[in-house]
Image (cartoon, rainbow, N blue to C red; front, side, top):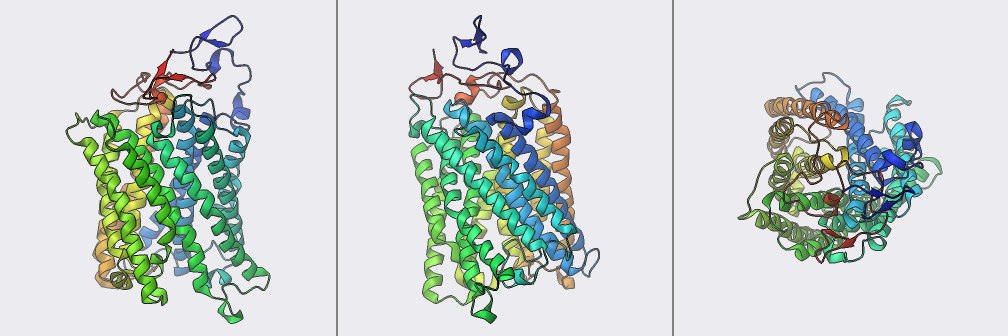
Length: 547
């Protein structure tokens, strides 16, 4: 279904744009294609490659943490360095790996799914990406600054931040830049979705992935400035003699926690909603059924986004909050579990009586649903203020949020790659390699993080470089699992991603998945450089092109 060319080299006959190889004289080549990229597909690819590089770097830091904790006693790093590892692992994984990866997916898929020719603001899109590079260099380079990298935990709590070396300023600057990139990316996504849908595609006919990203983009615009405020106040406390968070000058360190978590809790939904979108695309395709309860999925996503603003203080039950405050945040947190459970119910109802096959995307989607649900339940346990008083800042919390962020966000990203990768590269992945990646990742992930629940319940605090003897066995187990999990992601890149990018696998058909729906399957594989230059005419369901 490629473009039919007339004599002048313009696309005729079909709604798909022209292929870059033949006649698009404007398509830049060589390094210029990437540096000056304005095409949504190229920028999407850049985001995905950047986020994978950050994932590997953040993973190396995590393995540093786990190598130290393999045995009791101080083995490899001193406690200060250990805190640098935990802090930078958190910052790099959240702002460098998970978020840019989802933005890469948004760039690639949203224009294809809504039948738009590109993102609304192509040059801003380019800037959004390139801002990430200096930010990443500053974060990674902070290890080489005097006094080492920031070691205040990824939450950057005052008053620790006042005591950090110059790397703290570099970290703050890097987060400002990444925040600006996120805001610009969000504006771009909102305008693209609201203004550039193909005629016939109403909001309630959009793919779920577009919906989740539309809602995520609003969340990002709402909370990124709040984070910017918190870290700017930290900066002025450090250098300009203010006392926002310094008790010696009449400030309040707890105020920092309120401001940070007002950003921080919506942020965790920013990292999971696009994952919900990806899973909502994959499950119907492999169950060979329509998504059960589409409208309720949209409403549930919106509810999660609204409620995410009134739960932040559940991170602060131990700060001496009045009981009334604890009650409110406890109830609000339990309430937010309802729309999340609606989504899980809908995915399971979609699978119910479906003719399911378990190719790698579906395996990752099912793995996601199962392990994410476990992470959700441990979240509900932590939401209970009386229980949280005991579990706060223990490994139970670490286990909880890795179950939702690794088995949630990361598994969904893998599922999305296996699902759409053939459309991006034009080549299929090796199914055996994909399945091996899934099963070994799932097992090693659980071997790493499941024991942490027991460590937390027994009272092992997080962010400590050493621990008493009674915690030794579970820590050794977790460390072995972590190294296995880390190696699997390198395996994924070497044996799945690189062969697809080099065109080694079987040629991908236009629609590799029998029951997949959506406009992205109406363009050839690999997706041509330009698609939908003239808006396509859609059928009533808005999933097919007519004409």
